[in-house]
Image 1 (cartoon, rainbow, N blue to C red):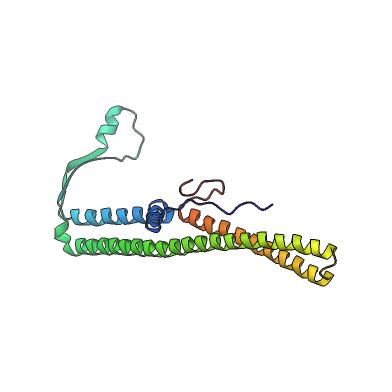
Image 2 (cartoon, rainbow, N blue to C red):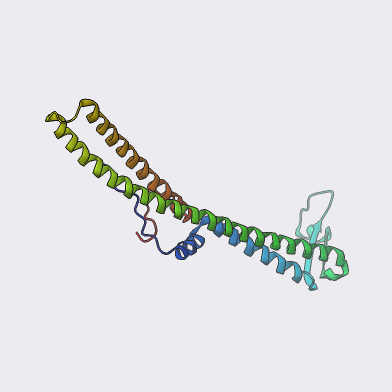
Length: 212
């Protein structure tokens, strides 16, 4: 006998959409990209602050290799000091950096928002598809039970000679169609359940879905 349909203990529609948005890997990547863009935008603004750094360099140069430690010192050129930078003195470069970072952050937010809307649409379609597949399976299952009873009755009537062989073959054909319809509906429930699990980030066929 065939197994039962794919079982998903689904919450209300709004709860399912919220769960998909929380667990979907694509949206998680989008959220991280948006956060990184926001950080870069803030960093671009802070580059307007003056910066102070200390430095020390040593450069040794000679035509022969040193033989004594003093030879290193004699040919060594050292420099040190404090370096100050004032980004606003190069106002054009600073403004371009701020504009670029702001545009990147805006694009990241727009892309993230579009991904959410697209995911909601896909998740809603998957939920409706699963619900419809379950209803189709239930109808096909009841139809198969009725077809099996009719087949048993037709077989008994044919043995008694009350119906012709052609009529009996017609009942058998109806039974075969009912079985095919049930098999197709059963497969559809697993396909739609797999779509929902995929949106939830569940790629292992043995992994439970929502509520399991």
